[in-house]
Amino acid sequence: MARSCIIIGGGISGASSALTLSQLRIQCSLYELRDQPATIGGSINLTPNAISLLESIGVELKHGCKVDVIDVYSITTGYRLGEISFRRSGHSLRIMREHLQGALLEAVKAAGIPTYYGSKLKSIEDTSDSAEVTAVFSDGRRAHADFILGCDGVHSAVRTVHIEPNRRPIYTGVAAAYAVVDADGVPAIHFKSSAANAGRSGTLITSFIEEDRKKIFLSAGMQAPEERDREGWKSRGQDHETTMEEVHRRYKDSVIPSIIPLIDKVKEFIFYPIYKLGPEGTWSKGRVLLLGDAAHGMPPQGESTGFAVEDAVLLARVFDRFAEKELSSIFEVYEKTRRPRIDKAYKDAVWRWESIKDKGWLQHKFTEWLAWGYLWMMRNSIEASVTYDIRKETLIE
Ligand SMILES: Cc1cc2nc3c(=O)[nH]c(=O)nc-3n(C[C@H](O)[C@H](O)[C@H](O)COP(=O)(O)OP(=O)(O)OC[C@H]3O[C@@H](n4cnc5c(N)ncnc54)[C@H](O)[C@@H]3O)c2cc1C
Image (cartoon, rainbow, N blue to C red; front, side, top):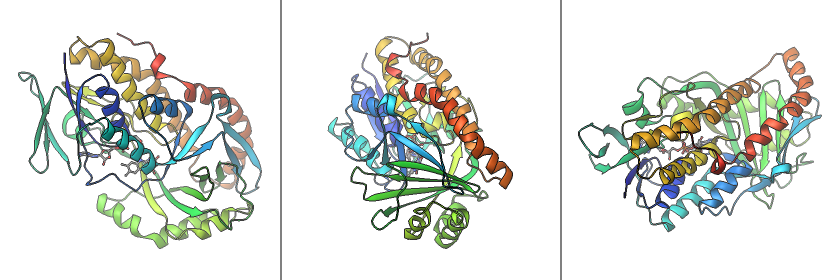
């Protein structure tokens, strides 16, 4: 039975699912809000299993810096507290989001999947007496298909206009300020590929972003009050002076020789408020299913991008195995199979997120003291997560 699908959102989950589903001859069309692929966005950590999945769906990753361990340092003592290792499972890849998205969209283009930029979803019409579902866009265009995938991120319109209007994004209380600087002239760079530098006022991520090690990505997590609306965030983001001052204030006590020179090199930090969804939630309704952050946005923990790709690969497996079944049964198998891993990842992400918030002196010392043991204890669970292969997961009927 030939099926057709409208994908809302040309980000990571949208492009990935366009690729996996079109490989099954499901006719996909991609609709993206922006007029062109976004060039903003910091760097993303692609776990070993995410790299393997992307390669398996025909995505060629030409950029990025291989990371076999993330070194964890104390900013206040300079001591190396431990590491998050990918050695036993290969390596992860630190890559700019725009390069990853570019690679995905190149594969989408090569597969001949129609992509419509400047398409903002406004509403969805899905009635039980119709065999099709309709996406209505803000310029009045209408598109019809057998089903719709909501791949439109944590602020998803598919979710809020159709599936679960009350499930709104929740501000985590933390924003990331990020920048990319030249490595040239920075003294005593203390990490081989990537480091998490923990201080009393948050963690500063420092990482090379290409194999030539000429550029370094910096990202400072910092607590910031929520703005009232999108406009408020926009003007907060444009207040570069405040962001610069804030990052300096947070890391001025660093005893690691490269930290202050790295911060001093930044001309402009980009300000990115971090939102999540509440746990669980509804993922599908009628002929519409949510994937990626639209379904399970969680605080960043280095795996969210991989989860979006996993969603796309699993959904295609279910369509392939149960091609003749009703959509509702396909969505049910997908969700039953997917929930356990996502629910566990969500709990872990929320718990780990607490460790990056501002701390008092005593709490900071205590956290540092526990860090080595914590990282050692976590190593098996991190390894299990980054080697997990959704292609081998048993489908639950
Ligand atoms: C511009 C941008 C920058 C980001 N920067 C970072 C970062 O620095 N660090 C990090 O950890 N994560 C970042 N993320 C989030 C990260 O990409 C996701 O957590 C993850 O990759 C999951 O991907 P996703 O496809 O589910 O969602 P996303 O990657 O968020 O993609 C959602 C897509 O849907 C589109 N869209 C939204 N609303 C509509 C609508 N109404 N109609 C049509 N299309 C719509 C968006 O423009 C976007 O292209 C960023 C996301 C975006 C969109």
